[in-house]
Amino acid sequence: MNIAKETEKYINNHPSIKDALKKNLINYSKLSRLIADKLGTEKKSSFEAILISCRRCQEKLGKEIVHEDSIINLLKDSHLELKNKIIAVVIRKNVHYETLLELQRIIKKKSEIFHIIEGANAITIATNEEFLSMIKEKLGKEILKTNKDLVEITIKSSAELETTPGVMGYLYSQFAEHGINIVETMSCYTDTIFMVQEDDVADTMKVLKF
Image 1: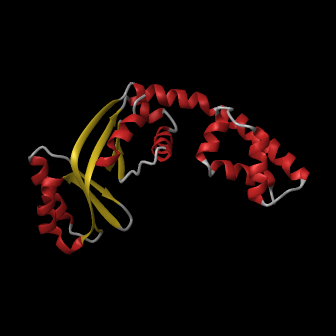
Image 2: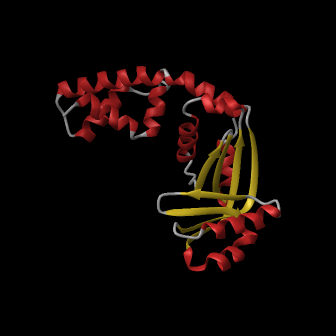
Image 3: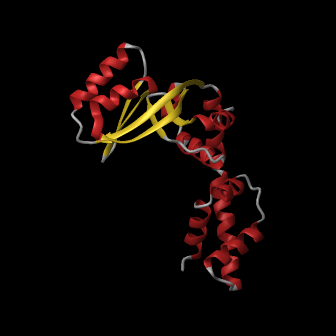
């Protein structure tokens, strides 16, 4: 067993521990005993090796604080835009693209949002719930799943977003830490878009209050 690799793996798999270690807010002895117990090793030499690995991880993670400050400053200068009554309809990949273009043309003509997210096995359409009946009429059996009662939150940032590493990772970790499920996510240039359930909006706004 490579103690150093297993210790780092354990820390990386536990965001709360990783964050506390990054900020040097953790008892190394208690953490080392915890990891030793999880790895099933009680040897004194193993405990000492884990302790050394934890300290080395802290040194490495401590350097990320500078990046985190840059991320927070970027997000502080960003603007939020919310749209409620949003749906995300998942459809089969083999749907005729002409149908999607027709839907886009109709919905865009009414100045409503229309996003297409194409994956390896399916396509997701995100738009206002008032168009659900039309989507069902045109796509019918091609629909695999429909998520309703969503809110689209757009974070509008400066062009620095493209050259600031770790922004998405930071946001994902904040959502996860507060138990908020991201139903859909996408980005376009300096816009970062999340879709969450309406019930999670209040908690989401607290997370995004920088």
